[in-house]
Length: 342
Image 1 (spheres, rainbow, N blue to C red):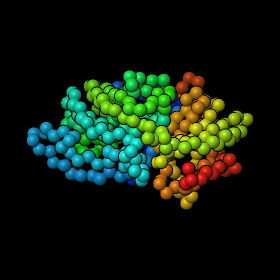
Image 2: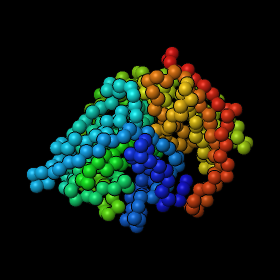
Image 3: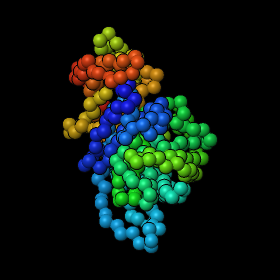
Image 4: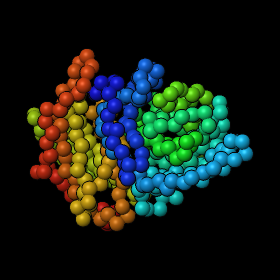
């Protein structure tokens, strides 16, 4: 892992719209403890992942009525998951649209949409306040409960990003992969509670309690997920890495693998479609050797070629910066899949 105060993966995503950072549960706690000591957000990450989002249409808004506008008074663009993730498939049957607002401590938060996909949750939200100075480093901290169980306990990895829409309004995207089977085993109509607890900005923290209760059902998506067994073993530097399977949904696929020595090695993948177009990762993480990386695929995708990239890393025992010894693209270990007939 990187130094706890080193900011990684500060790459801008599609058309330089969103700033996104990858965090785990431990890193989230460390960030909360150390935030007041730093001028910017600095995290420690297991994985450096990228996320694709579509461009936001900027609008000029004039606030009236003595500044008492709320999010409902503003047309906020780019809040759908399709826009965030550049999904060209219709996912209305899989996501849950909430569209509710809660105000507390002079800040209004709107929960836009939520998507549950096996052990992954993606949350779109927006926030409005005339007392908060939003920046690309703004972060919202929250917990998610499904049928009374907090799904973010036990470890998580993923990404969080923000985009300033106006001086007083900011959009957020959170994409978390959790280290438990609460989402995966959930069936039927689910009671979901999301509690936003704190907002972090460059110029201060804002505490509050913004609670959203709603119901969601992931059965329709679960019933449309197909599994392709890969069972491919890679030997690199006398270390074994196992690629287990790929799970394909109507708009994404998840690559599952086992990285036995994840303290000294890292793995990523170059994924290209039948036209040679590279598909970027949208999230993932490693938990106790078991890893998963997610990708968004186009509705026109019929074949995928996956090429492993292995990194050997040096991780100081007492903290410090991770360094990379080797970074090898294993072309001879590449494999292909046809997915149009699934």
